[in-house]
Length: 107
Image (cartoon, rainbow, N blue to C red; front, side, top):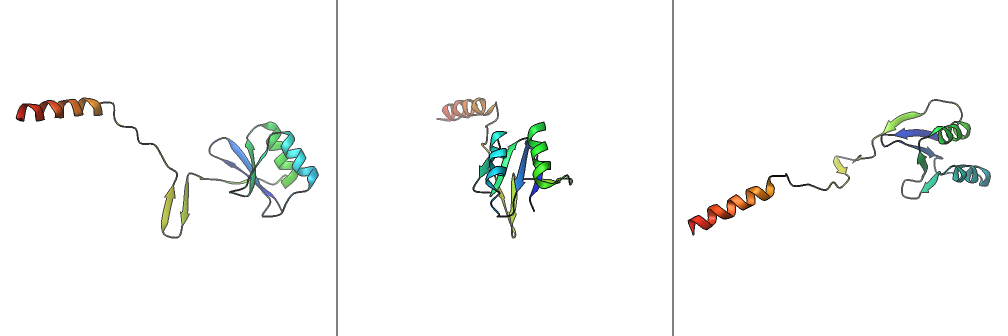
């Protein structure tokens, strides 16, 4: 049986547990902007009234499973995080300039 859940980024996903949904169900989901994610093997969409209504219709009126934290995935003892761009502090350039001045005075 299919299950739906909400994520932290304002989306909703439907997991069919590896079973391909029927042609009619797929077209119904595509009509309201559900998209297939082949990596996670789920159908997903941005959360709104239409997408939630279709998820409830397809999966039954049961409560959704708890939101997942897709940003952090655990595999055994290792923790894998999504890549994050490190932004240098605003005073980083100022520190470099002062360092250059001090080293120039010593020379």
